[in-house]
Image (cartoon, rainbow, N blue to C red):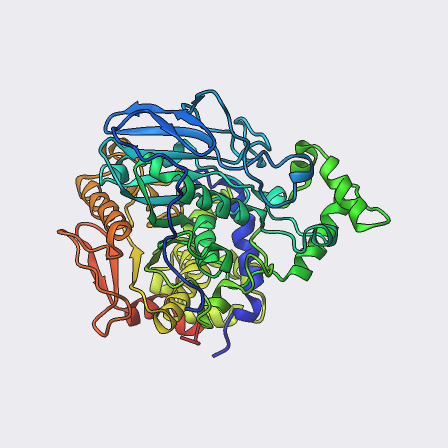
Length: 535
């Protein structure tokens, strides 16, 4: 059967068009964790004062943990450092207060404080002695908005004796512009946000012992764009040794990444929009660096993604995984059963999706050639003639679920480390900060699993969580931390078999009880033989 692979870009554009409107939350290469630095002090007694290689930081004592906020891990990316790889932050002689989040990186449509001086991270550490496993979080937001700030407070994780690090990284055109002039200057260009993340991971290697963390046991995890970031690190030679395990949450939405040539062409178009046409590429770069953040934000497009560059991302994620050219570490990955409802709600349309407009909307997403095939594959009767639910299924399957299945199959075939795959399927999950129109049921939508990992039971109940959902949050957060600790997410209340084992499969996180889920049933429910017949 013909697939939508050739017409996948329109689907990805549909994702990009809606994701920018509201996401308010948001084995060739060697694996392993790396060694610790001799320069960072190891904590002898728990205290709110720690010594990093750059200087002393004083954090804040919370109930059960210490938090250290707004620690610079790189120099401000301003002046000649705009559109360039991050550089080391300057040290300080006096004690530095680490009691407030650093500025979020510039992004459109936000009212909170923004500045290009935004490369900060936050550390949350238990009060008892380490060394503890470390989890480094990369936030979502389509690579155009979000931060590692207060949305991702991790008491559940820290309570399991985990050190958690959350990271800001450059976004939008400031974080992902490629341009011929930049390539001439640097040898390659683009994907600066991924380089920021790598710098943060190096900071963790150099400093986390001072916060009772184990630099040899670092798990990177992220959701949506943060999940795609984690996948990018899996296939990046430059990330080898900076982490020991990885968790991907809803990050499998991008099957291809743009080549350097395509990215440079887009960068030239961006320069033109900025009024920076010039006689030479170097002059265009100089002009781009002279523009204000406001000028850049005024014309920045709604979406960006990491692009190929030989030193960071030599191949697309799917290509690298399929070729076995990835950092072979224990991996936990999954998607949500109703991802696409979030993006339907994000459009802000009041008119419901009905039989009258469904094919028009579908045609705009997958193109006229594939629309009849999709209509036939997804009969409305299977969804009780609920066309919003039907559109949710099409978007979820074509953009998230089936590509995740492809990636999991590649890792299972080519990797030697444990692989655990899930589907989050609590269809009564509290909304992840978005209001759905009356005609749309969100279900287990995009980002809805985050409240089951971050926050506290009390904050979850305030959002309307039931006792069963609080219990599921406990099971999930302990699975994440068990995986970070040992590479196996199983614990007293959860048995999770390796995806690659003959008896292996998936788990479905739902209420009232977590259920086993076979790979074949998952692919059948999501029509993956159509979307990704290569598996």
